Image (cartoon, rainbow, N blue to C red; front, top):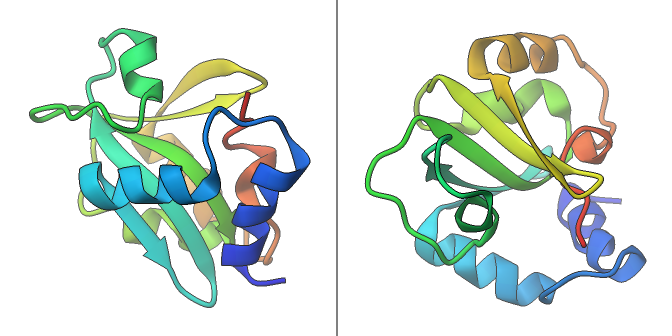
Length: 128
């Protein structure tokens, strides 16, 4: 299964607030979408100190920020960090309905060592 199809399948296997298409459109407008044969990512720039509801709302636009919020990711985890436009202090994601923050460098280092094609869905978003 391609990373795109794997990411899309999350919306079929878990209850989600919006459709895959709605979240994809939001990230095309407010953030970044990366789709290659190796990875699929939806992420955007946020402030780590912002209200969690704003961070989790893909339509909220932040002026500047210190964190990449990864909304959805699938594919070769070792390549994810290469698609962020720049290093920031933090990376955030939601797992089991809880917003989590990790230091970007630590997260990038750990992901770089994952050389297989498994999904990062184990680490990244759990949709509610």
